[in-house]
Length: 106
Image (cartoon, rainbow, N blue to C red):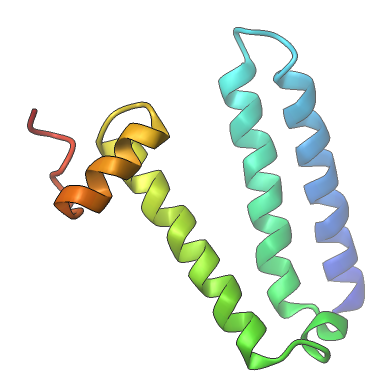
């Protein structure tokens, strides 16, 4: 199990570096963000299962991590379904409430 987790951490580092490299050119910047973001998400998910990390984390920390992930998903969905600006999408979600068709009708 330890080698698998270390291999995944190495893979996430490679994904992050490839993402940074792709972000250096305007035509590939969006895909670079996706590559780097995918690496960070994978590293976060593997961290939940790492035995050395889970032995020292209390339940409160897990709850805080899940809340942070839920807020990030909420903002991501609001941005994708609404405006392209996260700030505008956030204001729309807070004021009018979010529902799956929020950004489809203007």
